[in-house]
Length: 156
Image (cartoon, rainbow, N blue to C red; front, top):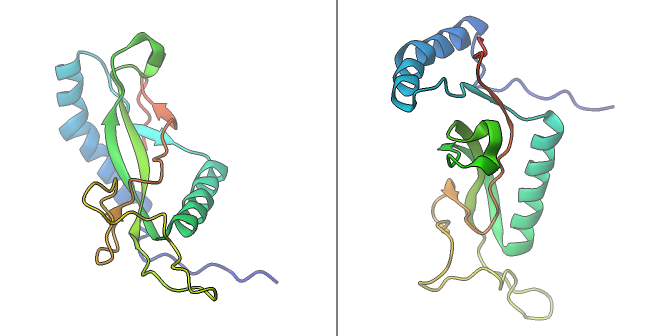
């Protein structure tokens, strides 16, 4: 028998979600559209399968490379205004990146330190540390390319 998931603490009412979206449309969308001279994306969609796969991927890769993956940060971005991005060119997007911290090194049964692939020298390509649970893990690839909601804008 599957255990029913707990109710997340971050849930909001549908009315508050609608208010948040209307505030975006009222206070940001018009300014952006005026500046870029076109209507911008106002939503990004990922399937549950894509999100579950990304979560599994970052947990697995984190485990293999010595990171304790604690979360996902969502960043806003803008696609380059280039032909290869087709209808997304110049429009806002949302991308995800793993966050967490470096696991403490431990000795395995052979006396060899584990997580040797985590580089701690000054040239290391990571912002994660042993102390910050929420640092971006730059050695795990971010995820992008959800479907964007743009003209006509999606309304919540």
